[in-house]
Image (cartoon, rainbow, N blue to C red; front, side):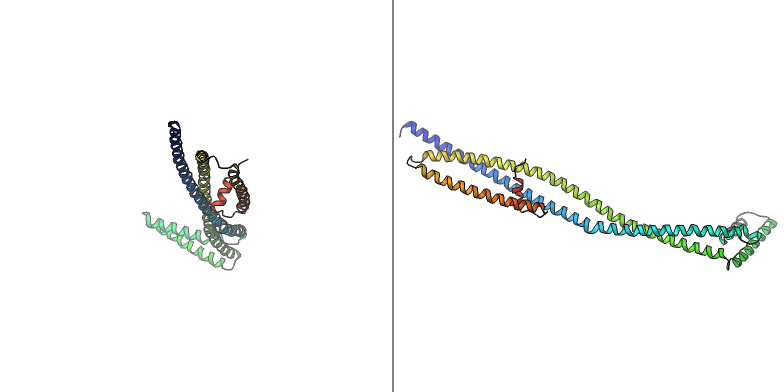
Length: 306
């Protein structure tokens, strides 16, 4: 072998080894990025599951219960309005009766037993607190005695008159109104509690959607990088193939080299057809809101954008 041929052979072997190392490097980087792609897709599917769970809670639990208590609150508010109108009516009737009442002079200035009792309490407090002369104290005692008689007469007169019945009705209406206010407070709190849970759920959903958006962007960049290494791998493998062909004897016929190419072309056509069919199925599943497997998710991501 001549010196020139020997040097050419050595260079060829060196180039072949370098290409082989590049192939291994690019294949490893591509495979690592593909594994990362799988992790991204798995995480995205998990996020979709969390979002679906939150939406289910909102729709089937929080919203139904909030609307249920809101409806009860609305009906109770209507009832409260009815009782308030009834109370106003009773108070107006009581005032009208007081004006036309035939009570004595002493009772006309009092509208209820409570006012008489309050007046008596004030007089008794004066006796207890202030340092009075005996004459002053006796005069206050006489006032208390007079008020006690007025109260007695007032009660006796009210037992069978309309005013007493109206006053008792007012007390009942006020008691019912207080119960309505208490119930309104409880039911409103229940409604607000479920509304707050809905709000928290939607906040969590928005956070997850933002996280999903970020992951999708990272996934696209990661896939681009994986595709770039795959392209570089193919180019290097093509170079290695050409070098390998250069080492083979010249008697290899062209017909033999063409046959594998035709088979590969048909194989590629079949794969493209199968990929197209699988993509159509994946798009239908995505449209129907169904979960995609890893292969289907990648098919959708690999679609060329218009």
